[in-house]
Image (cartoon, rainbow, N blue to C red):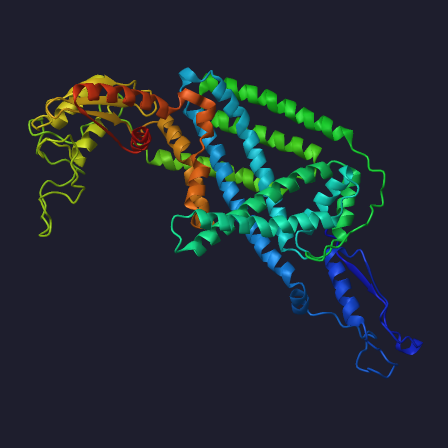
Length: 588
């Protein structure tokens, strides 16, 4: 498609009596050659070579003048603006959709891994395992084709490959369809969609003073939607064209003769091979690869049920993605390029990096046979007042500006109305209760609560509920009768399963934040749109009530009813993963 142009220009034979260079021809030109041909026709009009003595300094015998690149750019000024805006829209859309799709894929993968072994045999796990390589392949195809569209938008003529591909696909179904129709539809969407969204965002904004900022964000959103739409249309057209020899050749010929954006040139070139033949063996190879993928996915499901190991499921999903890519290459050979492998490697690094980073922040469990030491000691607890290595200092110089002696922490107190300040819970009290959920066994929880609260006004407590320690986001419920307060405490990240649950919640957001470092996807997008994009939880739809937050919400709802009947106040506290689950449950 991008053959090097070969220009054959008739020379001026000084001694042969030829008087003009008006006769110029271009062979195998392509879009660049076509643009040069148009410029040459204008520039060579009126050029008179004269006789052999007209220009003795021209030893080459040619007086042809070629338009300067700057002049050519100014001549096609509208196309220049399309090239700039089109490139920005396409790569902005690429960054946004790459972040969302890879985040969704990672979220779904870690949702599968977060499923407890006791619940491994369910439809959600099977559907999740089947969807992961499909989502990854779709992401890779989108990235590959979007890169082509972005480079094509930069080219001159702009969007030449896109217009040629869509036209070739449409002409096979509607022979009267031309490049003019494609160009008109392309420009209508390119100019109209961003303006429409800019007006809508500005009109629906709460603050009218900065309407121009809202319009700019809406314009960028419209450009992103245009780029996404044109990418989907191009991918479908490319698949339709790519597996048929005749349509593929028609696209190549049309591309070679494509005019500049805004010229609405009707390309009527016909391919040399008018009897294109579809290669049926391609479809056979495609189905062979798909069959292999199905067998491999069944094996992955069995390995997950039997061993529940990260590396087995991860390697199996990667192999399934490669086989799916080979099936696509067999059906549409031009659809996937090197960008597929870039996306593939990026997903591997992203998944492993997210897991490693989360595990690095995981609280290490105590050695076998040992219990977790208390976070703090109450005044009557054994060892109270002793210096502990690595502990916070008990004695320190109080700042003169400090309102009270103590560490510079949050001074908010929690409790019910009518309670004395002494009986209300401080942030340290809630942190202590949150830590108690980290003890593995119920006896350890009771011993830990006793050591941490003995000798304090919170020494009167009751342990009402202890969720199984293997539950992701495990919780305990502690009642303080004197204060008439009941606290639901949720454990933080303390195991590999908890790390999977962490990533099930944070993966999409983490990938989007990482991508915002490279491109301004968060600052340019309206906040409401960003929230809507990341609020959709595919894992919750697939796994239903097995979602970790759902069980906690059910337990909290039950305790809320009980505390209302008893006239008590219900509080929730948690650290790390526990804090995220508390936020989700309390919002419900």
